[in-house]
Amino acid sequence: MKSMKEYVAYIFLSISILFFRSTLEAQVGIEAEVLPWPSASKAAVSITFDDAYISHVRRAMPLLESYGFRGTFFLIVDKLFRQGKFINVRPSAPISEWQAAAARGHEMASHTVSHASLDTIEVRQMRAELINSKAILDSLFLGQPIVSLAYPFSRTNAVVSAVASSIYQSGRAGPPTDGSAVYNYPATVDLMSIKAFFPCSTVEQWHSAVELTIAGKGWLVEALHPIDEPGFCRVATENFAEHLHYLSQQHPALWVAPVRDVVERIQQWRTVEIEIKSISERVYQLSVIGPHSDQPDWQVALYLDDAHLWRIEEENGQIVSSTIEEDALVFSWPQQRANDLLFLRPKDQTHIAQYSWGALKHAIRKRPEH
Image (cartoon, rainbow, N blue to C red; front, side, top):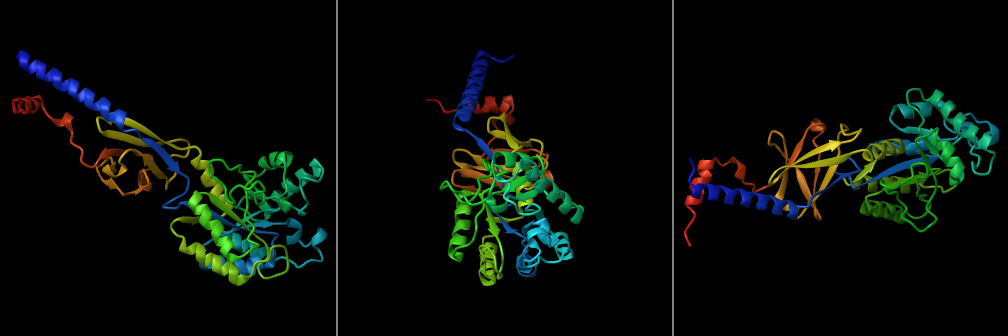
């Protein structure tokens, strides 16, 4: 039997541990955030092209591919077939060349059938423009559904956007007119009214838009038209090449991807979150939950006091690489462990619970007398 002195020591120790646990959990406030962009990216850029100019195939695509980039090309159906008001204008590239580009990973998207201003025509005609352009383009690019739309002349309204949302996953509008940022915030962007940046000014201003996007951790959608051929907002080949080189230098902070891919990423990101459970005095269990929790390449930021004092481990004790960014511990969830658990623990942790009663009793008896 234990003596009264031992019972008192045991009770004292139990109260001390409970006090320590409650004090620690009061002091360690942890907030988790799943970051929207993959790998180590801080922002995203989509390079888009309107109106199916021949220079998009002959000039833009080779330059994009030389840097490993892929673009989104908003095609006017009537221009592809050289009909309607496009009979007597500069022709587009042959459809076979657009199909080959799609096979190389470029996104083909809709700019309607005739490029009519959707907010000024009858609803019946507007619906036909949206439905028929998707149906025709789907038939041309088999296996690669048309999911992105650019509103002609950047014009839309609530009715147009509502109809478009039943047909497409996203709709690209024009530059902001309210003085807001030129880029889109992934948490709040209306995917049927995506803001775009038109690079009709200097290359320096074009680069500056990217810098602002990285600083704001947003998504910049660049809307180009002809490359060295007549048309609205014409861009010189050398300026476009200089900008692509600039974008390549922003790696890994910048993710360059077609609109389709970024929209899919945002939709998935909006459904996942990190669940944190306290499983002992100084150990927290982390798991990814949500419909798309098994998707790889999620970045996670843990906001806690003294982030540099903590580490992330896999279940087998393997340490997960992390960085300190401001007051957050940031890491990429291991792709091979998307459905597994990770653990947050202090770097200098000692496990009080591992001591036996005998060891604790011995430790107490060895305490110096005062």
